[in-house]
Image (tube, rainbow, N blue to C red; front, top):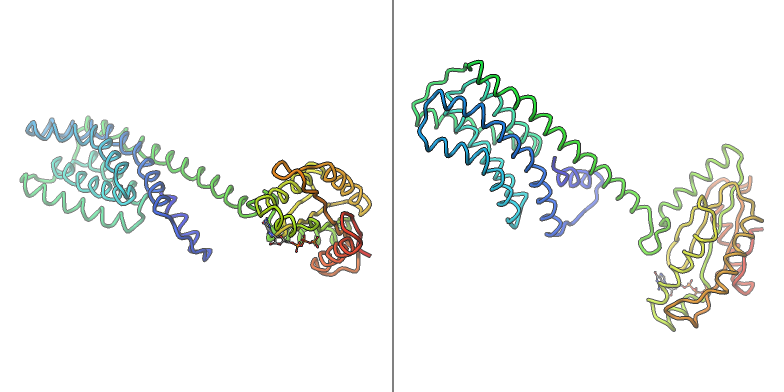
Length: 366
Ligand SMILES: Nc1nc2c(ncn2[C@@H]2O[C@H](COP(=O)(O)OP(=O)(O)OP(=O)(O)O)[C@@H](O)[C@H]2O)c(=O)[nH]1
């Protein structure tokens, strides 16, 4: 139930060095404590009844009843408050789990190891410890519970009897059935959130932060796949390399902010003009790339002339005097190309042809 651990392990496996801020650590610790709040609150509330039924039989002093009520109904909220107010909620919640383990041992000792309520307590503590901290936390928790049982038996001169009356068994049964279900539900919710989080991270890692189109790494992957598929299934495809004209002078004259706005504006014009299935990428700086599956170079040129027209009428809100234009190199896939880099190179050469021919135009690879 601890996504913190899952992620650090995943990053370690991927060899990604992820420095985590104190704030991130705090928030993930808080989420961890929040996830344990419901199982602890519900679990201890239903555990109250089997333990109380044994204490009735044992005719213990009133103080023990106060402790039992405090443990079953107040401790879960106190534990949450302690974690929520702590500077390190994760560490605090681990301490809470160890307190849970020790208190469970005290009640097991007090009940003379009455078998059914003891089984319910051991099951609940075991699931919490193993589910959150793995074998290591489970091992130390189990040791603490055992020591607490021995000490309590010594102090109360209790004798273990390992039996339960039918009523005690009946009251322990709901814990044995309900607690694993609550725990499984919380784990399921955590897993669902984690996979959604992972999906979003994966998506983000494929996109360019400024424009939202594919970044170079992912676009090249798409290009490679397109290249393989087109060759295998004898399909046609055309790629484009697009560069903003005189972008350096826009930056130098108007500043990098206006330069950034220009990059975003060109991206939007491409997105508005091209088909949704066209794969637009930002190759870096003011350079864009597009894969047009099943498209002839003529259709690509027609699409780009619409972009040229739109840009001719476009004014940047931050600097209306700036005239935006682009040069485009178009390259259809040809049978002679044996590597996707050759395809890209052909589009690049066509782009330089467009630049040399005066810019603000589209040229096709020879
Ligand atoms: N504002 C901004 N500028 C960038 C970014 N990335 C790269 N640049 C700048 O973009 C400029 C790229 O200019 P070039 O494409 O080499 O040249 P150009 O002025 O566009 O000239 P031509 O392409 O020949 O028309 C450089 O000055 C880079 O510093 C960015 O993310 N934002």
